[in-house]
Image (cartoon, rainbow, N blue to C red; front, side):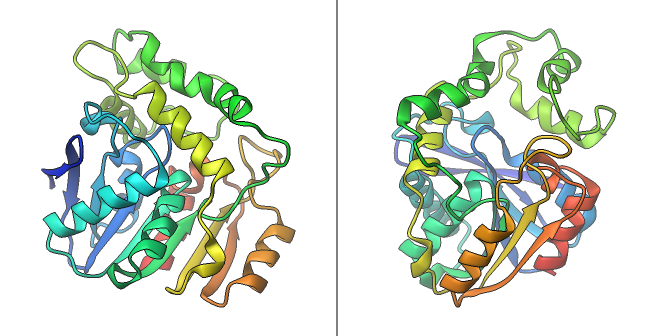
Length: 277
């Protein structure tokens, strides 16, 4: 059973999904163009986990919450969520940009974070030569989802799965995830500026990971987008993180998954479950 609560933040109200289980709550933070149903696969792999999963401002149930958009603002929003749920100190699991938000939260308020599980994110990605304009151009296709209307979730799924992907079009968890994106008017509830501003902040202004003090576990994908693509985190980069951060307790790669399916698949979700239970 999923319960939706609403949490007041600067500029509006966040929608937060609570999936009650038998464990201590885990704050689960989705990525740049995603929503709270990103954790469908983790819930399926570990239904005993208690997940507190917000839609970040500018996305899905929190679409009406405007800017500013930044890692720091999202971290402040997550503190409001913890306060609203009366959670003193929690495990935080973040995927992609959500992992960067998780790191920012742990640096800002280490007393509120018990430990971190970072899924293909949280540490700097290669950004040599990138400019804000180049990042915005790269993320423009994701940001443009708001610009069109879809007749139903099937039409949106066809659009969403265009291009290289390991996602399973027949997966009902994917259908539920995509349905959560759509408003009653058939348009995607995703603010263009939320995607673009957050992408720039994530890639060009990552948090100072070397200052982390809470126990941290990193999970990376073998590929970035589709089979045989270069990973977001090559082995040499992961080795650098391990050497530079005593708090990084483990770093492992999940074979046979790309960035999206590092959580949006049974294989990826099971690997995340293993780090949380």
